[in-house]
Amino acid sequence: MNKKYFVKLSEVERKQVFETINAEKTSATVRKRCNILLLTDESTSKPIIHNEIAGRCGVSDVTVYNTVKDYCLHGLDYALRAKNHVKPPTAPIVNGEQEARIVALACGPPPDGYSKWTVRLLTKRIVELEIVPSIGRETVRKTLKKLNLSLT
Image (cartoon, rainbow, N blue to C red; front, side):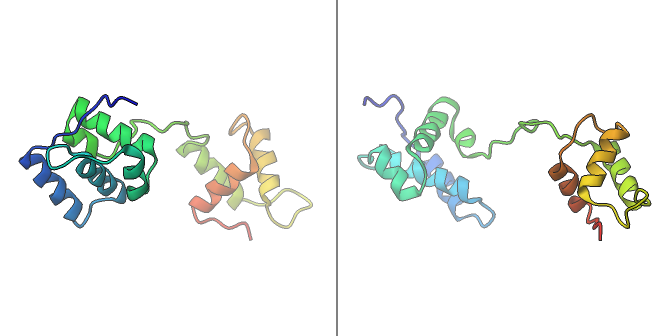
C-alpha cells in the first residue's frame, strides 16, 4: 500500500510532543497519539509500518492512519487534541422538566392497591400522564438512579 501522508516533526514540534507525553494531566488517548507521531516521524529515522505501530501503542491501524492524516492536514495541535462533540450523538430522552415531574411522581403516594412504586408502575403512569410520549423502564430507572432516588 502506498503511503499518502508523511510525518516530519520539527524540533519545536518534537519538544511539544515530549512535553505533552510527560505532562501530568495528559489523557491516555493523547499519549497514544503522541507515541504514534513519534514512531511515524521520518525526520529522525526510518519509520515503522502502521501495523507494527498499532501493536506497540495498543490501538488499531485505522487510529494510526487517522492520527497521521490529522497531523498532515491540520497540524500538531489538531492531531493531539481531544475531539469533543458539540452535541451528543443521541438526544436525551428526558429533559430537566420531565425529570422533575418523574421525581415528583415517584415521591408521591403509590396507586391504590400498591404499597410502593415500582419502575414498571412508574413507567406506565408516566406514559398515561403524557409526561413523555413513550419511555422504557430502563430510562426511568436511570433517571431515578441519577438523582439518588430509591423506590424502597
